Length: 165
Image 1 (tube, rainbow, N blue to C red):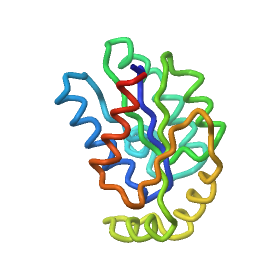
Image 2 (cartoon, rainbow, N blue to C red; image 1 turned 90 degrees about the vertical axis):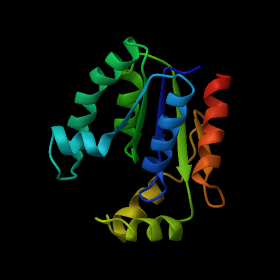
Image 3 (cartoon, one colour; image 1 turned 90 degrees about the horizontal axis):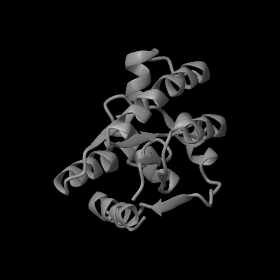
Image 4 (cartoon, rainbow, N blue to C red; image 1 turned 30 degrees about the horizontal axis):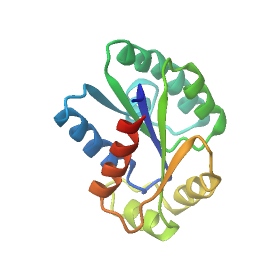
């Protein structure tokens, strides 16, 4: 079993929905966990403006909180786009524990459609940038193509991977 779960993917792929259901399922199975959206954390602790410096500062601030959760046997479920390699590496290298790293991917048109249905869409350009930046595979990540999958199916796949490690 892993100490924490990191879910990343482009805007509109369903990270928050998957993370929320995963958190509920883990709680129902008796696992103490905490869903942490890096976007929400940044908005509440650094500022709502999405800049490189704000994102970097939020990651620096959140690492000790994630380590605290792990030290109390709470499984952090961290979700964010995280397409910036330096921020991803900082996060991974400074969290004390083993991670299950998940990359959710869907076709570009699906991500756009989901983004447009939000209360506050991020916009086609931002979706495209994150989608393009996340195309390269990382052998340390478990990539899930969500196109023809329900949220429940994605969560079941993650859970099977989480419990087997």
